[in-house]
Length: 377
Image (tube, rainbow, N blue to C red; front, top):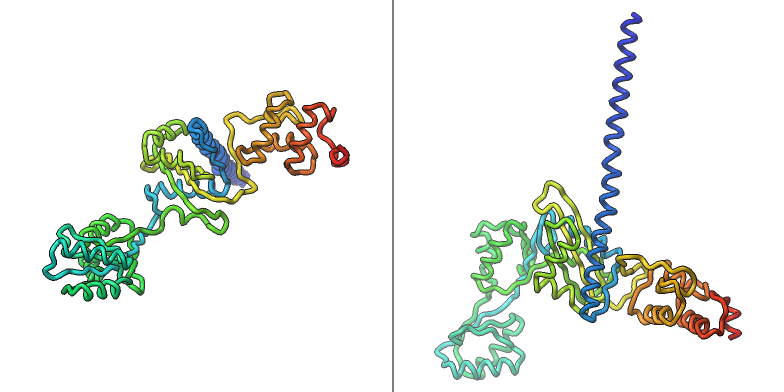
C-alpha cells in the first residue's frame, strides 16, 4: 500500500511540474509580444523621423504624429496581411454613374460640334464618341439634352447605360449584392478584377468604395484630404523608406505640402507573404490635437528652466525655439515644455517668451518667476 502511495505521489509531483512548466511556457510569449510591440512602435516612429528629415530638406513643414492615427495605421498594416491594397479587407463596393447615351441620326461632324457647344452652354457636359455620333451625359440632364436636340431639329434615340447590367453581372458568374436603386453593388474581393473588366467593356463609369480612409472616425479626426502609403517585405524603417523614396507616387504623398499630420503603423506576421507590413496615413486638417507630437532621433534634454533647445546654455536660440513653438512651426517634447514653462502655470504662452527675453537681457536674475514678479515688471 505504501508503495502504491509513493507511486501516486511521484505521479502527482510530475503532473504538477508539467502544469507549472506549461504555465511558464504560455506566459513567456506574452512578454515577447510586448517587446515586439515596443519594437514595432519604435520602427513606426523612425519612419516619421525619416519623413520629416526629408521634408525639412525640401523646405516643408514637419508632419505631426497623432497617436490615434498611429493606431489606425497599425490596424491598416494588419489588414494588409490579408488584403494588400488601399481597400479594406473583404468586400468591394462599386458605385455606378447613371448616364444616358444618345445616338444622333445622320448628323455631320460640324453639326455635332455645334450641338456639343449648345450642351456645354446648358451645363450638360457630354462625353462624345470618336466619330461624334453618340455621347453620354448624366441621367439628370436628360430633359435638358432632349430640349437642345429638339431645338436643333436633330433626330435621336437614347438608352440607359445601366439597363441590363445586373443580368450581365450574373451572366459572368459574379455574385453581387445590389442596392435598391441599382446604382451600386458589393462583391467579394475575389470578383474585383472580373467586375472591373466588365464595367470597362460596358463603358460604365464607376468608383470604388470602402477605401482605407473609412478606418478613420471623421468625428474624432476631421480632415479635408487624406492619403496612404503601403509597403511590405522590409524588416527595418530605412529600407522601407527607400522603397517609398524610389516610387514617384509614394514620394509625392510624403512630400505633399498640404498634409499636416501623419500616422504610421507596422505589423509582423511570420507565416504570411511579406511578413512585415507598413502603412502611412496622411491627412490635412486645421485641428490641433492635445497628444500630437514630432518624434526625435535623439530626445532633447534641457538642463533646466530656459534651456529649451537643450544645448546647456540659455540664450536667444532658446527664445527662437519658444517662438517657433508658439507659431506652430515645431513641437516640443515634455521635458522641453517643462523647461519653457517659465511662469510654471502649466501653459506655454507669449508670457513665457517675454520672461525668457527679460532674463537674457538681465532684467530677471533667476528663472522661473512667479506671476507676481511678472506682473510687477
